[in-house]
Length: 447
Image 1 (cartoon, rainbow, N blue to C red):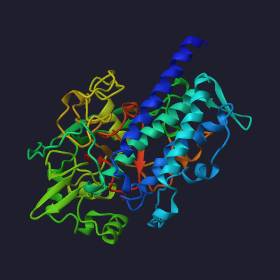
Image 2: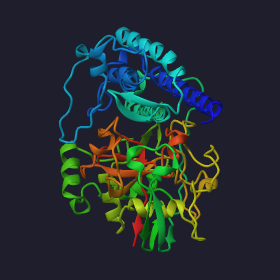
Image 3: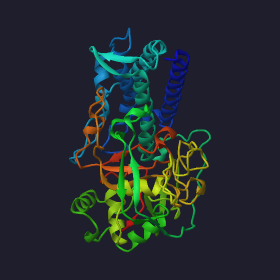
Image 4: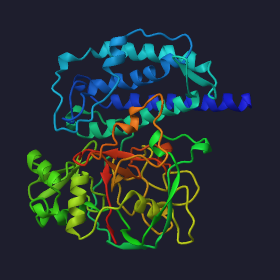
C-alpha cells in the first residue's frame, strides 16, 4: 500500500467534506432566522430538522467506527436521524414547540464537528472501519457517503427553500436576478437505433457508488425516438391550455385521484398573474420563460406524454440516448470523457434556476440529445428497483431497499443544484410519482 498516496486521498476527502459543509451552512443563511421553524413543503419536516440532520447523520455514521468517540446527546442523535417520505397521503402534524431551540441545535452541530475532526485526521482512508466487531467498508467509502449525503441535501433543501415565501428568504450576495425569456424551441425527435447500453458500476472497479448503482450489466434496447430537448414550459402550456388537467383519460387512476384530491391545476412552480403565467424562481417571480424546462411530477409528465401520443423513456432508453454513440461506443459523460464544467450544462450549483433547454450545445450526447445532464432531472417510466447483483450497504441497509416498493420512479440526469460528483453515469435518483416540488422535467419517447 502506498501510504503517501493513501494519506493524500484521505485529505482530499476531508477537504471535500469541509467544502460540502460550507455549502450547506450557506443554505441556512438564506432563511430569515425567525422562519427556521417553517414547513415550506407540507409532506416534509420543518426547516429546523435539517439544521440538525446533516450533522446527526455524519455523527451516527462515523461515531462508532472511529476511535475515542462516544455519544454526548443521544436524544438529538435519534431526533435528527431520519427524514420522512410519506407515501400514504398522511402529513406530519408536529408543531414548532415540539422542536429544540436553534441555539441548542447549533451547539450540538459544533460539538459533532469538533469531535469528528481529530478522529478523522488520524484514520487512513483505506483502513477498514469496524462496528461491534463486524467489518465495514473503508473510511474512504464512509466519507464518500457522508459527502454525497450532504450534497444531496444541498439540492433537496434548495427545492424546499424554493417553496418558502419570498419574504422569508435573503438573497445571497452574488445571486443574480433572472430574466425571463419569451423565445421558443423547435420540437424535434431523434431516432436512436437498436443497440446495447450499460447500466451500473462494476463492483470490482473500486469506484464509489451507492448500493443501488451495482452491479454493472448490459441491456439490449430496441430502436426508439426521443425528444432532442426537455419538454419546455411553452410546450406544457399548450397541454394545460387545451384542457390537459381536466381530461381524465390522460391520467392514470392514481394520478387523477391525486390531482383531484390535492386540487392540482398547474405546475407548482407556476403562478397565475391575471391572464398570464409567472414562474417562481428562487428569489423572484418572472413571466413564464417559454424555453425553460417545465418542472412537474411524474403523474403530470405521464399525462402530457399520453396527450402527445408518446410515453416517458425507460431507464434503459434514457441511458442509450444519453451515453451511446452512432459509432457503437459508450461515453463516460454524454459529451465524452472530460469532467463536467459549466460549459457542458447547468449543474454543480452555478445557478439557482433553470436555463433555456438549448443553452449548452457542448453538453449534447453523441446522438445530439441536448441538456442531458443538469437543468432538471428527468423522469423515466421505470420504477425504482435493484439492479442484478444488488447488495445493500451493510452499514445503511435501508438506503435503497426501503424504496424498492414500486411507489417510486427513477430519475436520471441532474439539476442546476446537483453536485458534479453525482453526475456520474451510474447515479440513480428516485421519487414518488405525486411529488411536484423537485427540479424534475422530462422528455418523451415514441416506439
